[in-house]
Length: 308
Image 1: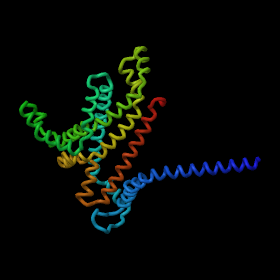
Image 2: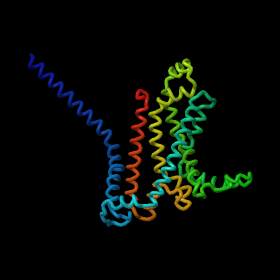
Image 3: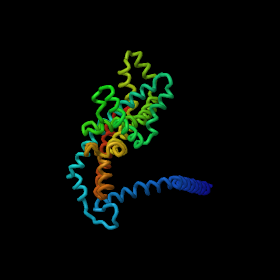
């Protein structure tokens, strides 16, 4: 009897493992299409890019030569790359600060009890559905034609000057456009985070005499750290890879005043046919963004609720 019970238990175990294995295989089949697409459109091109960065390929010819790390050494010596790096960091810092601050302010405003709250949320989200190229072309005409005419009629010297035509002010024209078009997604993410803040904590803090600013920094902000993490990563990545608006508005000009790293990579690869060199630059940017994101996430994760 005991032997029969033991055999039955072993058989049940074998059948259970068989069902579990079949279930795992079915799950794998469901994920296989996505896995193949990921391998084909991300992993394989990435590996190929690393290989091309070690060559002198011009992007057109069938033959090329292996030159090792020469492209990477050339990147560090390239004065033009250094200028593009400085511009990109300057642009990113200003744009990220403005975008996060304005998105958080709008989220707090639209999370309150205001009239037409749903309609206002739709209005502020509208720029997110527009192509950045389209937005850039529209603002290009505003900066070149509309604002100068308004400035001339009103006698305002600042407005009568084309902001994109001056090397010192062109960066601010790009920032205005990118903040206007890129504020919607961070705002929605902050709105989602605000819904997770317990009202009981705010009520208790109000009873204890805390003002609105104290409640924000002590209660609201710690709950928004995960959303702040996401928004910072997205905003920093968007700033360091800014390209569309530059193509639509300045083409890297005046001169090279608004030449970002992404635009420089495009110019080297597509205009100057230095594809291997451009690939080395793109890998450098990938490493830089990954490193900055890692430091930022590590620092902000310590400030989440329960980690303070």
